[in-house]
Length: 522
Image (cartoon, rainbow, N blue to C red):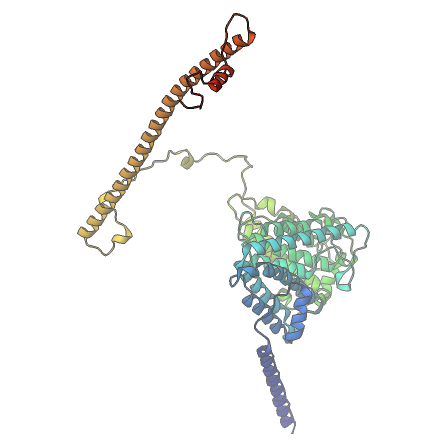
């Protein structure tokens, strides 16, 4: 009877599961394919609340919005899709913050899969319109930087607390850091200068160097930023000094003498100002949590995991993992700069000298520390030559380049259009093309010559005409001057001269005595 009950329960559970799957399929089929582009986050949330029942349905709605309103389909959608791109970034941050407070959300929500789907959509939209995507990301990074500056100013008037308890923290939210985690999957982090990736790297460095650390949440977020900086810089072989310094500072929190080790911390936020009671007792709480599989403990960004007893151990293990990863990426370079790059990490490793007998380290942690120290000693033994402003010239640089002239045989030159022709036909076509080129060149030279000759002829004619015009104008001026002199003498009167002017001619013309008859006819 008990077995039959168990079988009935199993069959009922399987039937309920099948009904639930069928309901999901019907709901997905009922979701319309064409949506209007939501230009605000509230409009997107209303759309998801109306048509979606699970996290996969919400991802499907976002994908369909992009598919039916893509810029590739209609260039007029550019402005709407640019606003939708910013809405997706804000949606990404909201889902990431929900992961911190409530975790993945179970099989119905699956927030991590939602983030993956949004990342794929962002990548597709960035491929459709890179200019719009870069502008939206630049504006969003500017907002993140201003928010960081405001929180840094608020530290002076607002006491710092634990973000897991809802108190004020100067560190960015989990959703913001998860969005920065998706950034190198959308844009290439290997470019020397990039309008989006380069400001993101600078922002991460500013967060690590200037944000105060008071609680375990702050340490976890800082390690997350360190991992992001290593992710951004590993392919381009760039050096992230803020990340290495923060790792060295976190390592000093577990030193045998914490107070002495923190005095020389490379990060100011983990130095003298780090007086959080829970941070100073990490070594003690590390010893309280014992597990046989300590090396398998993973660091989580969820609130419950950060507040758990295993967090001190996972934090130390993850710190050592990042140090080993950084040595693997940046170690054994040609310039042999590892001694300077990992100097602070080496000093932090030396703080574990075994003098703290009250709180000994777990065996698994000791093994990880010894492996890290062994790797550091093997990769930092190479000595580097003193720095020089300019490198000396090599034999290759001093050698004179010998350039052999490239000789081409015109008879052996063949064009792609001559493929498949016989040798006689190809030769005939080649000569015909050469004749056309020569004919066009000759006609071009003749046109240039005729234009030059015509210009010279016109210039000569204009020069002769202008010379004759000057002589004629000179004669006209002399005649006018003589007529003016005669009129002046008549006007003076006396016995100088009588007549002149046109008045006498008019009077004689009226009387008909000046060769003109009285009727006015000749």
